[in-house]
Image (cartoon, rainbow, N blue to C red; front, side, top):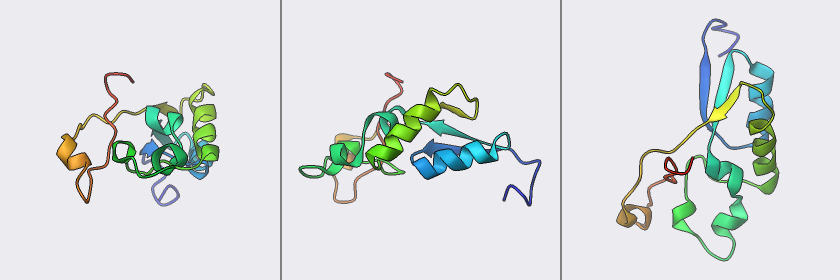
Length: 111
């Protein structure tokens, strides 16, 4: 997409992986990305280790420790292609705990 539309500015919301960090860095200044506090704080063991914790279910899903560490490094690098992203759509408890739970970790108050 970047080669086909070189003048188009693209924002990737909720960056969540090491591969994504590397892509954003390589595609800057045409592409930038938001990084959420929970993707920098949690890894999939926090979410799934010892059983599913539905309050930690978000999209994109929380990934490995290596991904979290890459996000932390990117977010604190000073590079302007990474910026704070929040999840401002809180879900009622019943929807988070439903069989098909709602994705998202409300973090605007602490972001």
